[in-house]
Length: 104
Image 1 (cartoon, rainbow, N blue to C red):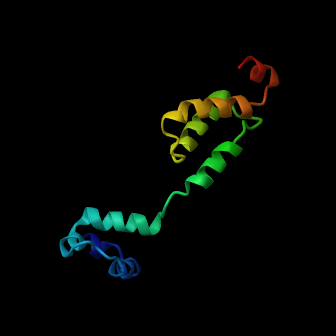
Image 2 (spheres, rainbow, N blue to C red):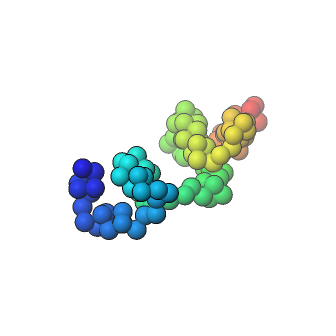
Image 3 (cartoon, rainbow, N blue to C red):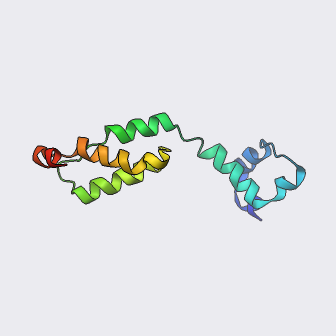
């Protein structure tokens, strides 16, 4: 059913997929995983960390919004156990107010 609905262009892409076994080529979960790998691609951790480390608080951005955005960016950085401390460090470096930075 899924393959019928995706259209001819996507069906052409589907035919190029290599599955581990023949049964996987009819398993909708495996098919969607293959499309995800093909269309979304890999996360480039180095680039994601670059974006995270370049992020500073914008002039009209509240501290809550800034921290929420940092948390969102950190999800794709694979920081592991260091995530909270790296977000904290980024807040200290990236906030607009120098007096608050010194207090932190």
